[in-house]
Length: 226
Image 1 (tube, rainbow, N blue to C red):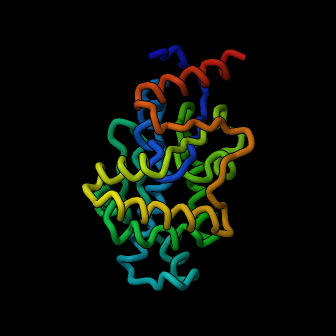
Image 2 (image 1 turned 90 degrees about the horizontal axis):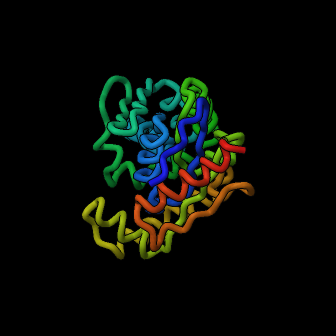
């Protein structure tokens, strides 16, 4: 795998739907460039966990926003061991559970919550010279000036197989849930999931992780050498 890239400053934006390989690829890419890694989806999940813990009404944007603004987030950006905490409580496991998964799209759709978290995300990006950021609105909203913008995708079946293997869940149920989340994320009024006009689309259906990371390193090499 070509790993020549050691730019002094580098921001890589990785967007795409669930199960496309964003997290694994982004972490591996961050390690390859000796940078840090930011999982913005986990930030929304952490806020969602806090919202559920507070008993806030998921149909009340003001109540959700209040919890979001008052929650102290701790985001670990080491790609080898990222971690997440809300008000001092580690939530790495709980934010991947079914309750948070079912509620996160509703929380992420609140414009004031997105504005708050985007501000935090941009501050984290500004604080690190080399960073790989993954999510659904990175290239379009969070880091529109990123050095490399990538939109990862895969077939619905491949995405379901991957997520089902990770979560030990039924493939058919997982595929239905991914379709539900895709619909919500793509149709929300605030910062919907979409591919940036200048992002490189990479279909990972038939690709291994090493192959995807090598391809992205090649793209980044060509960018920083110009």
